[in-house]
Image 1 (spheres, rainbow, N blue to C red):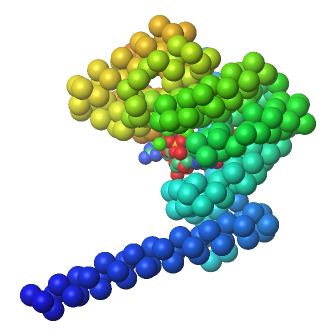
Image 2 (image 1 turned 60 degrees about the vertical axis):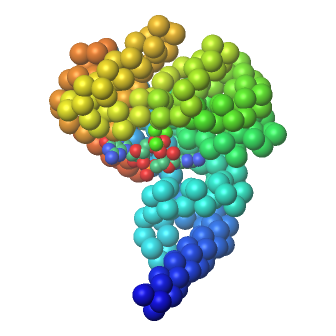
Length: 279
Ligand code: C2E
Ligand code: CA
Ligand code: CA
Ligand code: CA
């Protein structure tokens, strides 16, 4: 028993070391990756169920790692958030998306709305609003075409700073979505004080909407809450025709998910949007 206890200890400490080592490795590699331009933005189309058109897309970062191949954000975003690298990555993403807007526009989608994910450490940087405003101005993004996705927990933990930042940006025509709605804090008071445009129904609710009556109830409630507040409801993670039908029946405004399309490179997304016709 003694022996196995020691082995177990060794096992855990090796695991810890490996994790710490990996994190340090990722941290060091992020700066390098920014310099070498290894990050890429993929776009996942969102279908407007009322018009049948693709009028918006979510920007999702990827890392074209020289050795490890294409990495999803799950492999580096949390390390970047904890190490402070997320600010540089976030600025890169915003500039990239703003530049890509011109490509959508040139393809005839001059009102395409592009949604960018923002983590809380980014919002806490004092000049965040000014930075976003400068990028929007530089790239002549029309009002309403840039959307920022924030989470409930972000709004609850940095209330004053978040309210100031969001108010300043909404005044300039930037739109906000609450991402993963329903999974964070249960206080809804921020919906009163902030000018939010969309609630994104978390895919954990959408996943079991057909099989679990409780999830169906929650999804209905979120759609109804959104509409009562004159907001748009977007369902994410839509993977089946049954889920899509349920969401249509319940009056959900927009859907996003593998059923429609996976996140893809800019050119592919533009082609995809074209197949639905111009907005
Ligand atoms: P999220 O904002 O909730 O993004 C949606 C995630 O769901 C994406 O994962 C997307 O590929 C995935 N997804 C879309 N449709 C489906 C579906 O039908 N089924 C399933 N199972 N999954 C689907 P991804 O691209 O790996 O991004 C993961 C998370 O990383 C995002 O979650 C977001 O929180 C974060 N993230 C992505 N890009 C950025 C970025 O540029 N900046 C920051 N700060 N965070 C980002
Ligand atoms: Ca998101
Ligand atoms: Ca989400
Ligand atoms: Ca999520």
